Amino acid sequence: MSSVDYGRILRRSWELTWNNKWLWVVGMVLAAFGGGGGNTGTGGGSGTSSSNLREIPANLPGQLPEKAEEVLGMATSAVGEWFVSVPVLTWVLLGAGVVLLVVLVTAISMVARSWAKGALVGGMDLADSGKEASLKTMTGFGFSNIKSLIIFSVISGAVVLGVVAGYGVVFGVGMLVFGWFETLRTVWLVLTVTVGVLALVLLMLINAMIGMYAERLIVLKGMAPWEAWKRGLALSKGNFLPTLLMGLLNNAVGCSAGCLSMMAMLVIFGVPAVIVALPIINSGFSGPGWISVGGLVALFILFLNANVMLRGVMVVFSYGNWNLFFKQIVDKTEVKQ
Image (cartoon, rainbow, N blue to C red; front, side, top):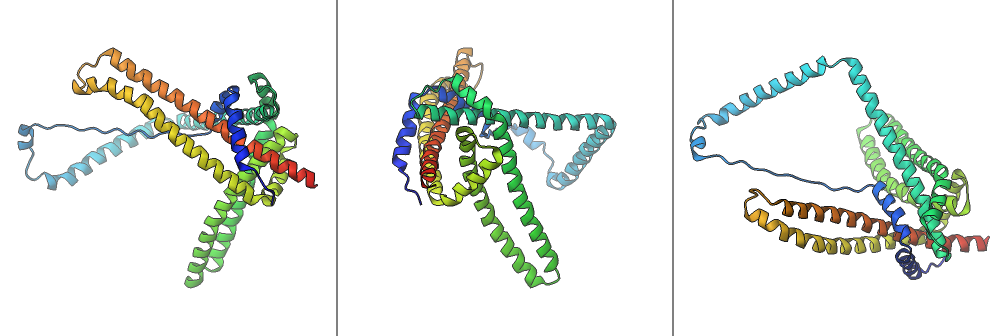
């Protein structure tokens, strides 16, 4: 097992991240297309005067099921009539449109992510070599590796689906074989589900490791996608513990920095937002001034932009860690060979 200087990796990665601001732009692209969202909740209430309360029938609880069933039946009938009234061709065209939209969004996301990955891996390598990591130079890495990175992602996804499908077949065959014996069927079910969950976790872990190695083999070493996948698998098996430790360390540092930065942003933008919102709340939301509303909107937009930039910086830092780790592992492996 190769010795890895994790402290040097983290220090050097942050130095490269901080001193090369163009990397942040690509990092923000990856952050935008890499997922992440928020949940919003709304709540409301209604008031009822005392006179209206007195008019509620005494036997209302007994009538509620009948009324609810009547309303539900009317709604179901209305929806059913509307559904039948729409021509079949319209539904077909609508379905085709939705499918095309999903395919288009997926294709755009894959292209954007592949471009950003190639650009960020190549740009970070340039920065580590003492060269300029400009948007122009990084764009070259991105465009020249889009096709290979997309093909690799398809290969990686197909392998994972193949393994999952194979396990599903084994599970189904076992259930058919032991289906006549209740005890054996129960044992088989518990065993395969337990092993399946553990195997799925290990599969996702190995797949992530392969992706880390293979993407850099494609961008930095010029390997073909399938060759990069096989080489990434070999490197993952031969350096499983160091790679796992780097991943845990990377996530721990990233989560800690991200949480602290988010708390700081909530204070920076939250306190002014509360100060602006207090007069509106005290007035009972009756005719809030446009200046106050505009201030809240501006603070919200600034918060969103700062959040995207923060996520972009953390993506760059994470990619920098993996780039430097990759160089240590691959360089030592090549020396041994």
